[in-house]
Amino acid sequence: MTAIALDHVMHRYGETVALRDLSLTVAEGEVFSLLGHNGAGKTTTVRIVNGLLEPASGTVRVFGQSPLTDGSAVRRRTAVLTESPTLDERLTARETLRAFAEMYDVRAADVAPRVESLLAEFGLSERGDDRVGGFSRGMKQRLSLARALVHDPDLLFLDEPTAGLDPSATQQLHQTVREMARTRGRTVVLCTHNLVEAQALSDRVAVLGGGELLALGTPTELARRLAPRLEVSLEVDPARQADAMALVASLDGLSVSAERSGVIRVGGIPRDRVPDLASRIVGAGIPLFRLEPHEPSLTDAYFALQQGRGAPA
Amino acid sequence: MNWRIVAAIVRKDLRVVRRSRALMTPLIVLPVLLMIVFPTVFTFLPRMMGGAREAFAEMFRNLPDPVRRSFGEFTEATWIRVVHSQMLAPLMLLVPFMVANVIAADGFAGERERKTLEPLLYTPATDAELFVAKLLAAWIPAVMIAFGGAFVYAVIVNVTAWPVMQRVFFPDTTWVVMILWMAPAFAALGLAGMLLVSLRVRGMQEATQLGGLFVLPVIALVVGEVRGAILLGPWMAIATGLLVWVIAGVLLLFGVRRFRRTTLVGKL
Image 1: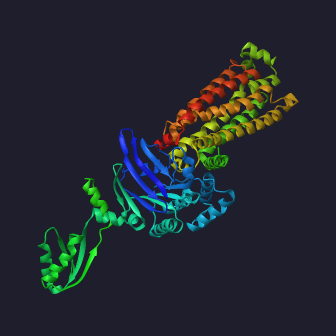
Image 2 (image 1 turned 135 degrees about the vertical axis):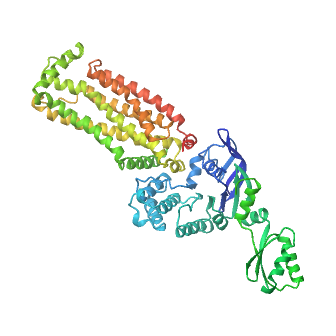
Image 3 (image 1 turned 45 degrees about the vertical axis):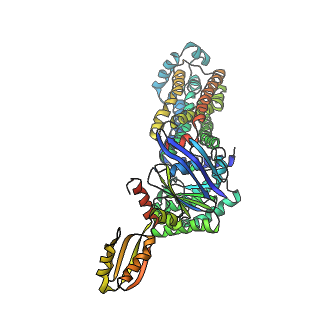
C-alpha cells in the first residue's frame, strides 16, 4: 500500500516557486530519502504532507487521506523530527513526553509506560525529571526523537536527524530507523544532506533541486545511472607497474595513478570497458593478479547530478 | 472538539508559564499590589495620618454632585466606601486583563519565538482545538486570579475597616457584578487583543508592547471612576461588561479567522 502519494504538486512562497510539479510515491514500510541542497523543497514537502501548507495545485494523499481535509487523522499516524530540537526548555523530559503523548491522544493507561519505556530506550531515565534547558545538544536530539515516537507513528519524517549527534547516538538512531522499517513495517522519510547516511539506510532516494524532482530510484540505480564511470584498482607485477600505467594512459578518457607499489588506480572507466582493459593488460604480457572495481556511490551520483545542473557541488 | 488534547495543551502552557520568572513576577506583583496592599493602605490611611483625612475630605468634596450625594456626608465610613466601591474597584479589572495579556503573549508570540510552536502544529490537534486551548490557557488563570484576589480583597477590607464599620459591608452589589461579569470580560479582551497582535508580529517583545495598548479602555475607566466622571452602579457595570464582551468577541472572531496552521507556519 502507498504511504504517501504526491501528484503534480506545486507550491509558492510569494513569487518564489518552492515545489514545481512534484510527483512521487512512498510505499508503506519503505525508508525513503529526500536529498537536496538548502531550499531544494524538502521541508516544504514535509509540511505539505502533514497539512501545514496548502499546495497551490496538485493532490496529496497520506495513507489514502488528504492532509488538508483529514489533517487530524493524518497527523495521528505521522511524526516529524525537526532539524533543530524544538523542545520547551522549561519542561522536564518526562513532562515533555507525557504532554505530547496526551496531545497525540495515546490511551491514558498507556501514557506512563510508554513515556518510561522511551526514556529508558534513549538513555534519559536518570535525567527524566530534569529540565530540558540543561540538556546537551545530543540529549535534546534524543528527546526529540523519543517525542516523535511517543504515539508509535506509522510514518516518521526525520529532518537531518543525526546533526549534532555523537557517533554512538548516530548508530542508535540508524538502528531505530532500521528496526522501525524492517521489523515493524513503519515508513520512514529522511530529509538529509548526509549522503552516506541516505545510502546506508534508504530503500529509495529522491533528489530535489529548486523544487523539482531531479532523480528518483534506489541508491544503486541512481549511482549507476548518474555516475556510470567506475574506478578500478589493478594489482600487477611491481616490476611492470610503469608499463601498466603507460598502457592505461594511452587509452582514451581514462585517468591513472599509483595507489601503492604494484597497485594502480584507473578512473573514469565505463562499466562495459572493464573486460577490455583487463584483456589489454594481460595481452601486453603484464601479469595481472587482481582487479577490483569500485562501485560509484550515492555521493558520486548526487554531485554528478548537481554539477550537471550547474549547481555548486 | 477533543477536550483531552485541549487540556494537554492548556496544562503544558500553564506549566511553562509557572516556570518563567519573567512572566510570574508581573503575575504576582500586580495582584498583590492591587488586591492586598492598596485596600490595606487606603483603609488605614485616614486613621494613620492626621493630614490625610483633610486631604481626602477635600477630594470627596471635589467629586461630582451625583456621586457625592450617593455616598452622603463625609465621615471615615464614607471614605472607606468611596475608596473601595468607587475609586479602587475598576483597578481590579486590570488584574484579569494583564494576566490574560501576559500569558497569551507567551502562548502565541513566545511559543513561536522559542520555536516550540512547530511541534504543536504537527500534532493531531485541529486548528480549533489549538485555538481554544491557547485561549483557555490564558483566560482560566486570569479569571481564577481575579476571583481569588477579589475574595482576599473583600476579607482584607472587612477586617481592616471593622473598627469603623462594625459589620461586613463589602462587597456591594456593583463589586460582585464587576468581579463575576466584568472581570471575565476584561480577561477576554486582554487575550483577544494579544491574539490579534501576536498573529502579526514575530517576537514576544513586540507582542507585549503592542498588546499592552489594549489596556487603555481599562485605564480610561479607572480615571473616570477616580475623578467621579463615571458612577459605576450595578446596571452600569452590567452594560459596560456587555460592551467589553462584545468587543472581545469581535476581536476573537477576527483572530479565529486568521488562526490557521497554514498561516501560522508562514511565521515560523
